[in-house]
Length: 85
Image 1 (cartoon, one colour):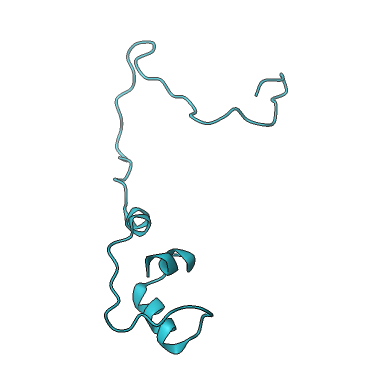
Image 2: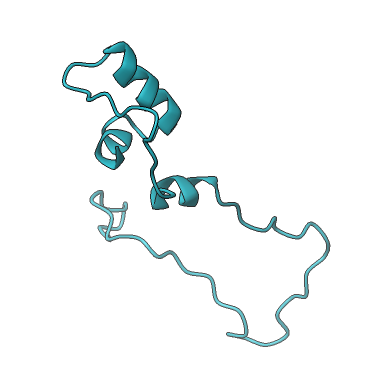
């Protein structure tokens, strides 16, 4: 059941069981009424949320290098006008 859950893009397990009963997908077994699957890590991650970014005023840095922003991806395949990647 886990394999078919992944193959069918993480659809509901009840739907997979019903599809097996109705023989709507080639080679999909009939799992019967006893089909059960543990919570899928990918589905749990996809349903999780993060805390919203606060909208109020934030404290600004008072000294140089007190707060640093940086990109965490790259190198980029397309060079800049100066030739950097």
